[in-house]
View 1 (cartoon, rainbow, N blue to C red):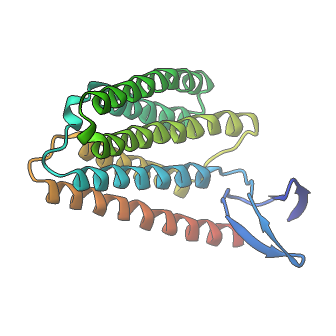
View 2 (cartoon, rainbow, N blue to C red):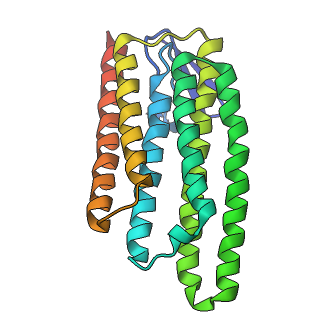
View 3 (cartoon, one colour):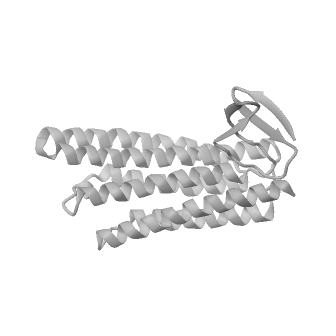
Length: 232
């Protein structure tokens, strides 16, 4: 393996898989480290994990606002949810297919989400002006919009990796392909649950929390699998 220092990032070459560490103690110093391997699955999985976290944040925020939440009245946030779901699906397709054209479309699609976020902020300001007593709830609604925007940002990351793996001629191992598909399906289920109108708030939140935990478990499992493959 070859170590090259570059802006406190260490690139390791000559191995079979790609993993994304956070920090490692090396040469007497704590380094932030990214390991680049011909199989680039782990970086996508890490973004998926963050998406799961934000989905759980959205459900928790909705629960805290209670049954009297006015979020259903904010059409722009509902549109943001739909558009980020489209971005996520297309970004994974671009990643798996190594399709840089589709990846570019995902990046351009983010403008729609950004514009909707601006409109959502205007909606919140209008709510506060018309009903100051709703100010705290309006802030929570704005946070939900922000979480959807962050999900869109992670979708852009995933789409962007398609260019990297195409340029570097990266090929996924059979196990990595299965891991990507499994994570994709899990995120689709999570997001579908997030977008559905809950009949029972507690059951809805529990379902999302369980799916988010599954994503965390899968991420840990995939990271361990990649360490094993690297050692072979």
